Length: 112
Length: 118
Image 1 (cartoon, one colour):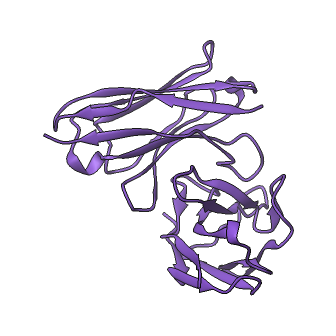
Image 2 (cartoon, chains in turn blue, red; image 1 turned 60 degrees about the vertical axis):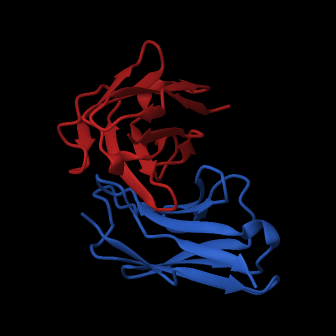
C-alpha cells in the first residue's frame, strides 16, 4: 500500500502569513485512467474531515482560493497563501488511487 | 443536499459486537462506492472497509479482517458495518464516507463513537 509521509507534523503560523505542508508518497499515484487521486482534507476541532483539494490541485466547491495544491514527482504540497484564524485544525493528505485509501499522519496548524 | 448519517455506536465490552449503520440521502446511493474510516481518540484516519456499488468488491484492513463485515442495502440507501470480537484498540469514531465526486472520499458523515471498555 502507498505510505504517505507528511511534514511538518506541527505548524505554528502567524495570521496573514503563508503556510505549506508536504506529503510524500512511497509509490506513484497515477491511476490507470491517467488521473492522480491525491486529496487534502481539513479537520477542525470536533468536526468531521472536510475535503479541500482533490486530484492534486482542484479546489472543492466553497473552498477559499487561498488554498492550493501542487505536485513534483511523488512530493505533494498544500499551500495556504495567507493563514486566517478559521484555518486552525489538522490537515491530512489522502491517496484515492487504489485501495486501501491511505492517509498521511496529519499536520496540526495553529496560530502563533 | 448529499448527507450521510451514522448510528449504532456505543459502549461495549471487549469481545462484544455492534452493528453500525449509515443512512444516505440526497443522491443515488446505489451508484457510489462507500467506505468506513475510523479515527481513534487523538489519532489519525484509518481506512477500515469499503464496498463498491453492487457489493461485488469489498476491502478490509488487516486489523479488522475476519471480525468486521461491510454490507449495503441499496433499496434503503443504507451502509452497514457489523463489528464483532471487539478489542480496546477498536475504540474510535467511525465515519461513513462516499466517493460522490471525482477524487474520492468527498462526503463524510458526522461519525459514530464506538468505545470498547470493561
